[in-house]
Length: 111
Image (cartoon, rainbow, N blue to C red; front, side, top):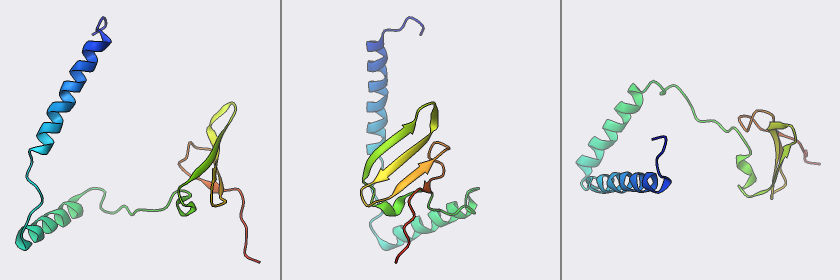
């Protein structure tokens, strides 16, 4: 593939995507009656219980309560993993590990 034409690669990947899309659409829809829905729910619960990740819990790792509208983002020159994120609702957050943990820069306590 060293001398492959980019157009032929694009056509190849487009074809693979098309075939995968057709296969995904050919699957049956959601169960219609209550017994089938209940069986599907029980199957999902048993898979969740058997999962090696079943002990993990979701947790908030960033500025989720800020409303989601990012106003500005600045990267510290020479430190690609350190950046600041400013939100429309007033939050300013800093990370030094590429966003894995975020720390508030402005903590305003109620008067």
